Length: 413
View 1 (cartoon, helix red, strand yellow):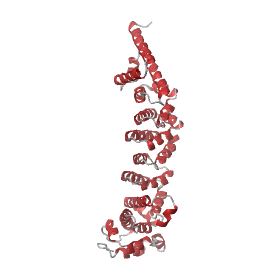
View 2 (cartoon, rainbow, N blue to C red; view 1 turned 135 degrees about the horizontal axis):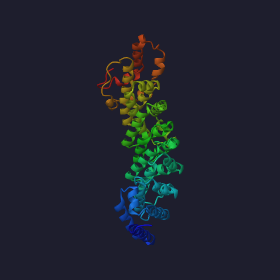
View 3 (cartoon, one colour; view 1 turned 60 degrees about the vertical axis):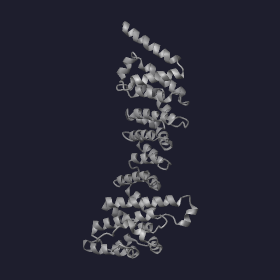
View 4 (cartoon, helix red, strand yellow; view 1 turned 90 degrees about the vertical axis):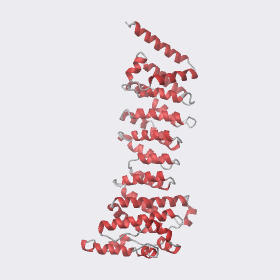
């Protein structure tokens, strides 16, 4: 038999539920305001005490109304925040299960795909998906099984809200950890974002990626971004991937980017010369950074004929950025490689200014060079006694570069 106090609490709960059931949009909005203000941060037991052990009855009404009105955006942000109070409640796992049983994940994902809804509403939906994902592996799998990665990645690419995009990054990062069954799916979703037109989305995707082999082409494609912060994140990811098995493919791809199509070839393809040259400059910059990080990487680049390719980029008078970055990286690559085997003498001075003192004739010599360091080095026996001779031969193979730059002020061989 219930006590008088318990009976009063039950009557209060029933009155509250009846008020909700009979209320219209404006009244329900006020009820939600009061609920959020009074119950934010409460635990599961505290919510049960507030609702006389009937908190699930109110949650059921919230989720039912959500399914009815989410396509119209009525009080959607307040409704999602209210549901979030239940899902985030400590010792309140039962609320999460109840929400999922009525198809809560699918509803949240559908909200992300509705173009007419506010960014604030979609951000609240992402926050609820974060709470679900952070509850454990099986909940992450549920989101992925509901085609969640695709919906979330598309929202990241299309969103114009920095705050919403950052919330999406946290969600995708959560889905990519402790979720081995669908980890590759999350990677593919992040890679799919890279070609989008949003620099912030590209940047956040690069920060979240962890080195799948299929990322090579999209990652190199991001180097043609005109946004320096995107290029920075791409190069940082490249540096991290040098410890992975994808390294050879990345280095080969970077070297290939140093030799873009000739001017007359652009009219026969869909590529824009400016973006191709930006990508060329970024690739040259990345090569210099990677070579400076590791003698081994510098040696691999030398074998990929990076000297020849950097000299071609130095001769690109249509883009000063390419010439500058190629000059710097050429000096870094050769000097780092040379020091790893035998000193080559003092490095050239101020390589970043070489292009400013170069005329068209000198540029043409560089652009049409036929330097092939690996071929020349293969003629030598790599014995310890011949290391010094090998270095001298390397310098001799660079004679076109030496001849071109010998007339430039401050350059010394």
